[in-house]
Length: 440
Image 1 (cartoon, one colour):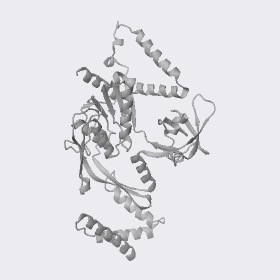
Image 2 (image 1 turned 90 degrees about the horizontal axis):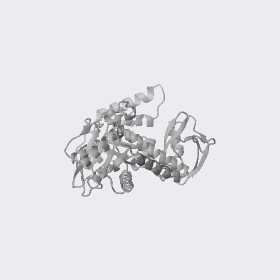
Image 3 (image 1 turned 180 degrees about the vertical axis):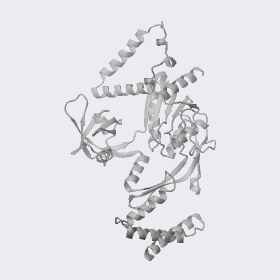
Image 4 (image 1 turned 60 degrees about the vertical axis):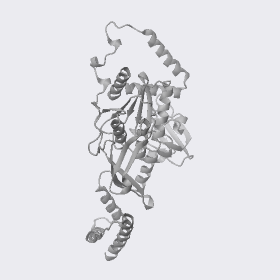
């Protein structure tokens, strides 16, 4: 016990000297607390019902210490540290498919554009039944992800079952560096751009610009507004949130600032001149699942009166975490600052309050549609069969020219647009943008 105490004392004393040198402040050693820790450590090691190694006990002690700080601080084991790095860089070696568990098998939710899976011809709703020689029946989702990820350039064989196809389909493909698709964009009616950001990662800013450029082209440079959907977006990188806020702010001004105990945590971020949408109206959609970086973007656009915020009060995570790498591939993530919107508001445990509050309503299930009637619903309304025929013919011809895989993807895109138009939040955002454009 004495030897263990001396070892802990030496480590702590050396660490304290370094901290003292860096901070120029006097730090007193908690001698009694260290003695108490050693006594408990020795007692558990000698008396606990199951044998525990020194490493297990020390790691548990560190884990408990960090967990006691707040819900967002964590001591990361190698696997968790690796996942954190992947989630922040937004890149990994793999196939490029979003997957989910369906019964005993793995379902392809969607292939990511321009990835090996997309080019090979994977489709939504395909069921993965084998990964190389491994039968995936009953396999945990996490294990299937581990099997499919790997070094870019390495081969992998995936066997799938496709609806209305009798025999299984075998894909022999090579892994590649995959950029996680955190941005999805669609052109809605009235040339309104809809963009959803699922999280804020390193590539998100570039993906957002690319998506907006694509929608501008689809509308023949006649966009009338943007719906920026940040619902259920848990956040991500502070820098990504700052860059995306700056994208829509024309004037130089504060985006967000942070305050903490150490000097390096006291930072402010400002916008530069230049609005990527040239002052087109923006509606930001949020709900209780919009947190952290989502709230930074929403708060900046709201405070600068650049966007109208619709939806429900956001989550209220107003803190910033710093992550460091530790020996043996471990990691540490701790809260180092609180952040504040340009007007000086902290949203910690409070959230962003929307300008227009909305309730969750499923338009597709509403039987009484009196509040949503259109011209065509009115008694005696003039018919316009030519327009209907023209649109139907144009869509049919477009689908007819595509390959079966391309046709399926185009059908999925049109289906997604239909789903969005039945989304009450999106429906109200479209109406608001139409109203803004009428009053210009």
